[in-house]
Each structure stands twice: as C-alpha cells, then as structure tokens.
Length: 157
Length: 128
Image 1 (cartoon, rainbow over the protein chains, first blue to last red):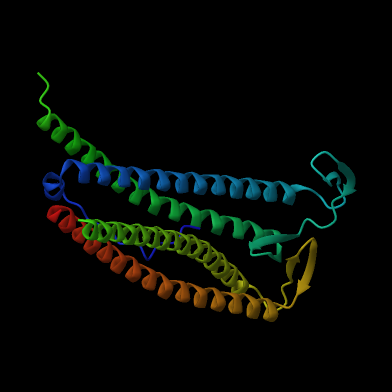
Image 2 (image 1 turned 60 degrees about the vertical axis):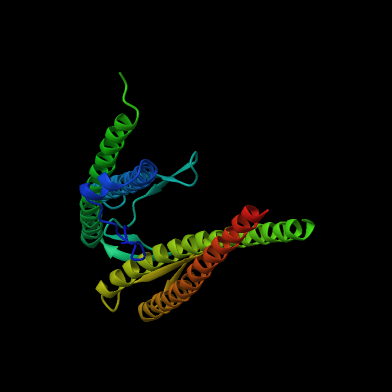
C-alpha cells in the first residue's frame, strides 16, 4: 500500500528559479525529476497489478458462491497435479489479511473485504496519479528551459 | 623545497582518507534508507492487519501461517501479537531516524573538513 515518504523534503521549484539556474543545475534537476517520474510510474503499475489480482479474487468468490455444496471439483495440489474432490462449504472462506494471518469469513464478508481493498487501492492510485502528473510537468518544464538555454549558449546558424 | 612537498603529500593523503570516510558515510546513509523503507512497508502492512482484526466479531476464527502450518489463534492473542509487532517496528524506525540524523551531521562536517584540506592544498601549491 502506498505510504507517504515522510522524510523526503519537497522542493517547490518555480519557473523563475528554473531560469536562474545554470546548465548543470538544470540537467541535475531534470535527471532527478525523470527518476522520480519513473519510480512513480512503477508504483502505479504495481497498484494496477494488485487491483487486477483483487478483482480476479472477487470474481472467483462470486463464482464460488454460485456453486452448490457437494459439487464435484478438481483441487490443485501442485501446478500440474489436480485431485478430484467435492465442494464442502461454499459459505466460509479463509481470507489472507497479510503478515501471515488468515481470517475465516462468510462469503458476503469475503466479497466485502475484496471490495474494500479494491477501493483502498483505487484511492491510492488516484493520489499517486496526481503526484506523478505534477512531477511529469516539472520534468517537462525543466526540459524545455534546458533546451532553450542550450540553444542560447550555442546558437546554431 | 622538500619540506613543503612532503607537507603537500601529507595533505593529499589526508584528503584521500577523508574522501574514503565520506563515501563510507554515504553508503551507510543509503543502507539506512533501505532498511527504513523495508520497516515502513512492514509497518503499513501490520496496521492493515490490525484494522481487519478490529472489524471481527469475538468468535471469528483467526489462523496464523507458521511455515507450512496454518494454526488456529485466539483473536485476542493475534491482536496482541500484531500490536507488539507494530510497537517494535515503530521503535526501530525511531532508532533509524536518530542514527540517520547522526550520519547526516557527520557527513556534513566531513564535507567541510574535506573543503578545508582542499583549500590548504591549493594554498600550498600556490606557494610552491
């Protein structure tokens, strides 16, 4: 889950400051901003993957709730070995809540859990998207100023 | 004069030593950040677990995965365990915070010392 990095100092760089900086400083700022944008994109991808997995789990739960008790099924023992079995109890599910803890919940509670987690991830995703787009605009602006400065210093005929 | 060149060489050796110390400090700071990140993630996960446990009824069944074994646990015990873990991680994070501050101070003073040695070397070279 995305937790805010409290120790990081947030630098608010405005256009005026960008203009005043030397070429080297501009390059450093742009590299730093690009790095941060990449990190944020990675985090966004991770959240998207996790959300996808949760949605799969939710769909599987829904499917399971439709099956009658005693229905014949194949139980995976390993990735390539399935064993025939019967569906015993479609009402209770074991939910992995993290750090090795599992909780027995009813089908409804299990679905609710998935919903809650998906909503949490979606809100984290939205927050991150905001931060990422701000950083991206900063990186782009810095790039523009950098280019302008380089043209100034080496006027190409 | 040989005396000033030996003094110069000594200064340069001192500079090298200080530069090595600085890079070691920077490595320590980077490691501190890594451990900090790991602990922060664990803290977040444990807080989520605590929230889930709080939502449960008294009679709900809680199991803990210990190796390949799923063991039934008492809700109160699970709560206590998670809380204790959260406390431990918070204490570790605080400790890391203070050691990070310490390292950053040392890094700052090391940089200043290096600057001074560099200035002396420059002065020495100018005189020669």
